[in-house]
Length: 460
Image: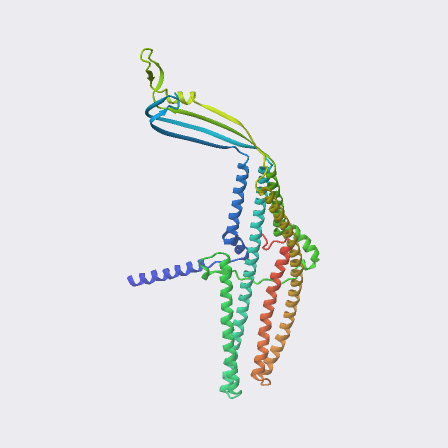
C-alpha cells in the first residue's frame, strides 16, 4: 500500500513539474514584445529620466519669480569687559545675547531673463517628450526587426529539417540499392556526404535561431532568455499600398510626422530663447528687499543711579518677548544694478548663443536633407526588395521543377548522384533565398510605412 502511494505521489509530482514548465514557456506576440520593451528597455528608461530632469528645470524657472526668504539666528557669550548690546554700558561681566532676523529679496526686472527661462523650460519639456518618442520608435523598429529575424530563422530551420529528412530517406533507399547491386557504392558515399552537410546546415540554422532569440530577449531585458520564444506565425507577403504613393508625398508626410524633425525644430526654439536670455544681461536689473531683525540681552539692566553714591542701580532683564518686541527693526528698499563692464562676459555669452543658434538651424536643415535621402532610399530599397522576392519565388518554382525532373531521372538511373545533389542544392538555396528576400521586403515595408506615419505595430 505504501509503495502504491509513493508511486502516485511521484506521478503527480512529475505531472505538476511538467505543467509548471509548460506554463512558464510563454509565447510572445509582436505586440507584447513591443509593449514590454516600452516598459523595460534601458535606453527608454534613461530617456524617461531626462524628461524628469526637464520637469525639475521648469520648477527652477518658476522659482525665479518667487522671492528668496532666509532667516538667521545666533546666540553668543561675552566674558569680561564689554558693552551691553542693550544698554551700551561698559561692564565687566559675562553676558549672553541672542539676535535674529529675516531677509527677503525679489526680482522686479531682470532683462526678461526669468520669463525667457520659463519659456525655455517649457520648450525643453517638449523636446524631452520628442526625444522619448524617438527612442521608443527606434526601439520598436529594432524589436520588429529582431522578431522578423526569429520568424525567418524558424522557417529556415523547417526547410533544413525537411531537407535532412528527405536526404535521410534517400540514404536508406540508396543503401538498399547498393545492397541489391543496382547502384555503385560511390553513390552511397555521396548521399552520406549530403546527409552530413544537411546536419551541418541544421546545426547552423539552430544556432542562428538561438542567437536571434537571445538578441530579442536582450532588447526586452529578459533575464530568463533560455525559455524565451515567440508565437508561431508566418508573416504574409502582400504588396503594400505604400508603394502606390509618390516618394515626394511620403517625404512631405514624414516632415510632418517624424519626431527627429520636430525635435530639431524645438532645439532651434530653445537656442533662440538662450540668445534672448544672454541679451538680457545687457539690461539693468531691479530688485526689492526687506529685512527684519531683533535682539535679546540676558544681563542685568541699569535702571538708574543712586543719588548719594552715584552707583548704578540694576534690575533683572526684561522678559524675552518684551525685548524681542522693543528691539525689533525693519529695513526695506529697492536695488538697481546697471551693467557697465564685466570683462566682456555678457557679450561673449551672446556670441556663444548666436553660434549655438546657427548650429541648431544647420542641424534642422541637415535633418531635413537626411530625411529626404532616407525616404527616397527606403522607397527604392522597398521596391527593389519586392522585385527580388518575386524573382526569388520565380526561381524557386523553376528550381523545384528542375529538382523534380532530376529526381525522376535519378530514380530510373538516368542521372548520377553528383548531378542530382547539385540540383537538390540549388533547390534548397532557392528556398532559403525566398525566405531571405521575403522578410527583407516585409521589414523594409515596415520602415517605409513608418515614415508615412503608419504605426509600426497596429493597435488592437
